Length: 300
Image (cartoon, rainbow, N blue to C red; front, side, top):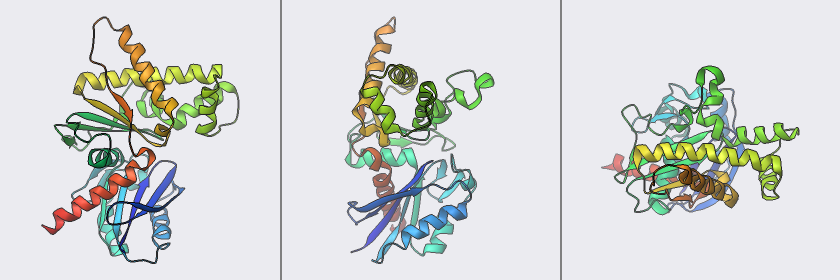
């Protein structure tokens, strides 16, 4: 059986999955993301690649940044700055001697949901992934919209406050990134930085400090969702990333949107907000579906 390696590189972990030709996940795991060099990043991919002795058909990659998928070129690597200006597809195909396809991480999540998830049949929609930052993908007329410079959907850079006074703390990636949210809660509780699960356990138990910060967090997200709604008028918003598996997170954003709508002086259509069907695996699945599509086009 031919196996394919799907990679989802985030700011904290490189998640990976070995998949069959039908896109079923056979085995998966994760390794810490290096912040040192593109060579150290490839070293980890090589280690994962060598775990499998079966026949291997290619590598599908979900990566942060601005990516020209037709050329496999990364203009800017997002949180992985060492990928700036890198012809990754060409380099990896020379090293691994198999086809390699790459796509932006949020667009991979959208591809997964459009192919076999909660964005099937949705002509106009938004997919947001919450992790180290906030990834975005806009679907217009049933197609992923990439924009003139492939920059569409880079919602982490939405300016939400005074950028001169607050710097990066004014952008959505810091306001909405889960790591930043966890840090704010832990600092307010005067405890060492802990994991997201513990913070959401505090919220579930009604911890006053954690709950207050979470409600503010959700309201800030609701404001930006409304701004996106005004611009795109989507039918549905899908929320992805590992945190989307926690019902408290989705319910918190839904509740904040309801409160926001009720504060408006005019009636507005209400956004439908749902979790991605594939949650934390959406990028892995989408990267593989993208790989299949690109390889099919290459054979024509």
